[in-house]
Every structure is written in C-alpha cells, then in structure tokens.
Figure (cartoon, rainbow, N blue to C red):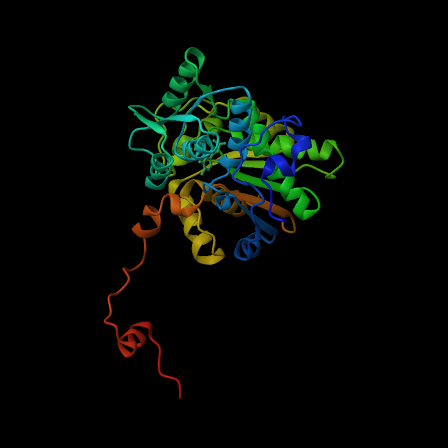
Length: 355
Ligand code: F0G
C-alpha cells in the first residue's frame, strides 16, 4: 500500500487531469537521486545523479508517456503514433499496451539501439523504419497525425512536457530546494523544457526558494542549438540524441537564457569517457546519450565554469542495458574461460589460499 503510485497520482494537482480521469500508468517516476562521489570530488561540488533509467521502460520518457497515453485514451483515441530515436517508441509501445491501443512508431533506419527496437517489437508496436533521420521521422509522424485518426505522442504534444516536469518536482522534494545547476543531455529539447517548467512552477508556488541554472549538452555532430542553425545530417554515436532540428528549439533557448544557463556541445569521445566513468566509478550504467550531461559537467569544470561548493544535479536519461554494445566494445579484456575448478579459478583471479 505504500508503493510509489506513478507521477500522475503523486502530483495529480499539478497535472492536466480531472478527478474522473482514468490513469494509464506503469508507476513511473520516483527514481533514485544518487550522490555521485567521484564527480563531487572532481568538481568540488555536491553532485547528484537523477537516474531516469530506473523508470519502467528504462528512460525518462515514461513520465511524459503516462500523461500522453492517459489523455489520448480519455479523448477516445484508438491509436497513437510517434517518431523516435528509440526510447519514446519503447515507452509509447508499453503504455499503449496498458491502454489497449494500437501503437505505430517511426524510427530512423539502422540508427536505434537494439534493446529499444526489442522493446517496441515485444510490446507489439507497428514499426516502420524510415529511410531518413529522426527529423524526417517527426515530420512524417506529424503529417500522419494531421491527416489520419491517430494521436501524436511526441513531445510536441504539450501533455508530454507536463508529465516530464515532475522530475524537477521530485528533485526539489528530495533535496529540500532546487539545486544551483541542473545538467542534462539535449536532443529534441523536450526534457530541458520540461525541467525548466517544473522548477519555475515550484519556485512560483514557494516550494523552492530559487531556480537552477539550466545546462544542456548536445553531441558535437548534432548540435543545432550550439551552432544556431539546423544540422542537415546529424551524426553521433549517441543515437538517442542524433537530432538536427529540435522541436522545442525556442523553449530550450528560453530555459538557457531565463535561467542564466548554457547550451554547449560534447564530443563523442567525451561522451564515451563519461559513460565509462559513470559505470566504473559511480556504479551507474547509462546509455551513451545520457552520459552527455556528465561529459558536459566535466568539460565545464575543466573550462573553469564550475565554482566549488555548489549543488548540482545531472540527469542521466536512459538505462545502459538499452545499448550494451558500447559496454562490451571498448572493454579492456574478454572474460577468460576456466574449467570447473576452484584452484584454477582462484589462480586466474590472483587469489592466494587463506591460512
Ligand atoms: N537522452 C535519451 C536517452 C533520450 O532518449 C533522449 C531523447 C534525450 C536524452 C534527449 O531528450 O529529446 O527531450 O532533448 N530521445 C527521443 C526519443 C528523441 O525518440 O526517444 P530531449
């Protein structure tokens, strides 16, 4: 009876639902806020990780999707559609099952992680691989939703943002106030928009005394907000944020400017280094795109932009199991094969017998 009830029940009065709305939920949210010891040492700050990979389908998208599917169902939709780099589609597919709706997903051909494709498949979504990138998929999804009886559940649907803003509520609820800086990866820019809205609402209602500076990081090959122009052929190994024309462009700029924050880029090499640091030194396994926040924090620290003593939260957006290829690929050594023999195993492990 004391289980976390999902973001809609936990924050019902702050979300666009009525008393009679039937909620579609997998009990998303309530994710761990984990103190990051090594990152705190490196920055001289108090760094926390908001581990969104702990959501039911393994990413932050579930917060927005419980809202989007709840409202679509309430409005009588029989089918939903989304464009995705993999996580939105995994989430939409799962929540559509709960709502007994048909789910169609459009993904860039060959550019989504295997685990995410597996999720859409096993949840029974209708999957189309589009011969194009995410931006092409989103354009196609919008035009299908405009012309056919299918509801769009991308973050251009404002109720997605409403659901995702609850992550900021949880952080303030746990820390007692907003952090000084909030760092997160930026792709289609829905999440930075949502966090900023959440922090503004809590501060506006006196539940926080301040708002954080919002720091967003894009992958260097897919950094339209940093370049100030659309990137026609976005590239990065962090496929989740391989996006050249973010839908929430103006909102991301507003979050940056109104918070006194920044949006910068990080190279794929920086991303993979942060990815390995998180796993090997903090014990937190995330997917590559998620590590862009931490890569950005480290880059900013090296550039002298991080004053010591601040409280910083980095959102890590998705679970490492979604895209395990990167965990095995650069691994220092392959696990050795041993016979079923304690002495042989001990020898390989460098263990000597106890007296
Ligand atoms: N991290 C992960 C793991 C993501 O899947 C995404 C976006 C982002 C960060 C960026 O968030 O788009 O709100 O700025 N994934 C979308 C998808 C595009 O289709 O799953 P954003």
